[in-house]
Length: 242
Image (tube, rainbow, N blue to C red; front, side, top):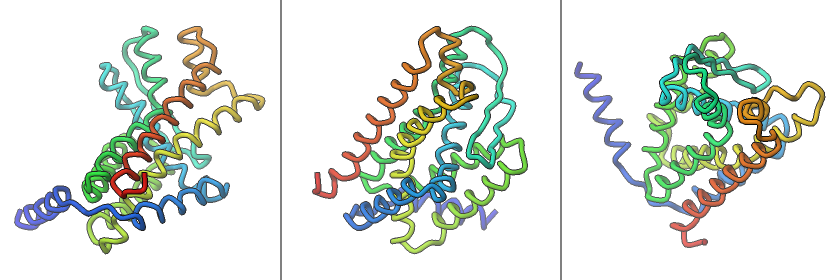
C-alpha cells in the first residue's frame, strides 16, 4: 500500500505540475512529425497511434449511446475494427461511425490546449490512461502486442524520462494526432478510389444516411483541418511565435 500511495502521489505531482513552453520543445517535435508523415515507412509505424485513437473514438461514442462494446482489433496494415451491439436505429449507428476519423484531431486539440497552459506531464498521463482503457478492449494478439509496447514506452517516458525528453514526446504526440488525423483522411480519400475500397466509415455513413460518402470524407477533412489549425494556434501562441 505504501508503494501505491507513493506512486499515485508522484503521478499526481507530475499531472499538477506545469512546464514553461519553449520554441525548441514545441517545434523540434513538429519537424520530426513532418518527416514521419512524409516517409511511408515511418508513417506506417506511427499511424498506429492515430488508429488507436480512431477506434477509441468509435468505442467511446458507442458507450455514450448505450451500446455494448465487445472489443477492438488492431491490424498490421494499421487498420482497426471496433465491434459493438445494441440500438439498431440509424442515428446512433451513424454517430458511432462518424466518431472515428475526427477522434485524433479532437483529442489532439484538447491536448494542445493543455500544452499551451504548460501541462505537458498531464498530457502524457492522460494519453497513458487512454491506452489503458483501449488495452482492456483489445481482442487480437497483434493489437495486444502493439498496445503493450505503446503503453510501456509512453509509461516510461511519463515516469522516468528526463524532463526535456518527456516534454518533447508530449508535444510530438499532440502534433502527430493533429496532423496525422488530416493525413488519415487524405489516405481515406485515396483508398476509396481503389477497387474494393468501399468499406470505409464514410461508405457506412452513406448507407446509413443516404448522404454521399464523398460528402462525409469532405466533412472529416474540414473537422480534422480545423482541429489542426486551432491546435497549432494553441501551441504556438504561448511561444510568442504566432
